[in-house]
Length: 437
Ligand code: GLU
Image (cartoon, rainbow, N blue to C red; front, side, top):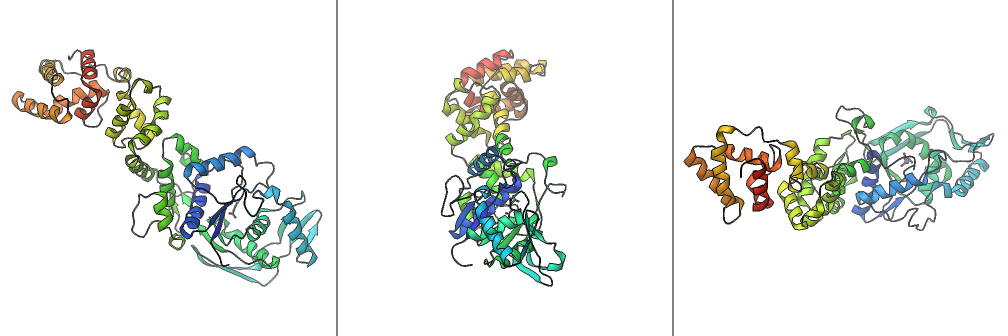
């Protein structure tokens, strides 16, 4: 089939948008955007029992969150008019009747069944998996319409893809075994065949098919854990594909430019959360400062941090200092709580670990520190070094207690940078609480 690429994502609205579905949607989107073609969204809601409007809405919202926009769909319409299978019943009946008239299908009660011809070799060249051959003898007759009047998946998908002008079918590898049946129907109905590209399976790190056992499966769970949509997009794009130059961190636009469906591998892809964490951290670091703040605020609020007591500039500076530590926005918000509240520090650290013998010398140091001018991390560090040398005390021994008293923990960005941002007054107040100022 000639003409611009027309691909589609055809979810069943029987659950939230899962990683596997998002992956399929994303690869369709990439191919459409790379080629300047069209990406169509079709809702496969023939399972009346399990399909709901709410699930349809969350799937659309999940795609929006990931930045996967579609050119035609149930919400925005398009030249095909109907983008839900439940609205396309007439078409399924009409084409089933054609097959009944020519004798290629027969009735069994209310159901309509396609008679699989014998001795036919069905083959297709999958863009990802290569050539697939199946002898028709291995296939049973195919139910087209069930006795309840609803079409089956294998039949409806053919009528829809053909009548919607889909010329490239990109979907999960679990549908390879359905493809020969669908090809028989294309041929019987006189429809031109589309091209096919099946995407590799996604596995957990234990090499088993990705499932709930491996952790979060819905895209929204990743949002709620503090992953950026750009990062989840980036990570999903790397499941079965990578740009020619091997780069691992890229934007949506770059991915669309670099994507080649021919370079998708059939090797199963492993969902590696460490990699997602790394990619997320890179995207967090690359965010414009105020946007990073905007995205982190909800996570601070979730843990009851008094965000309104601080200026946006101060909070944005704090996040800048964090340099993506924690990898997700949620953990970054947790790890940086001491910038917003001294109470959390007091709860974590009671000061009992301060070495009594060292207190006098530390007090003298902190006194000088509090008077330093200009109030700059570099000046503080220089002071600490000089002090260390003259007093014979290692920088670490000065910095570590300070870190505990300011943050309540033993890991933080450079402690003098933390001190600089907290400000002279706040530093004094925190040290005083521990009897050190
Ligand atoms: N509704 C089917 C699914 O979710 C679509 C499969 C296809 O793309 O053909 O698996």
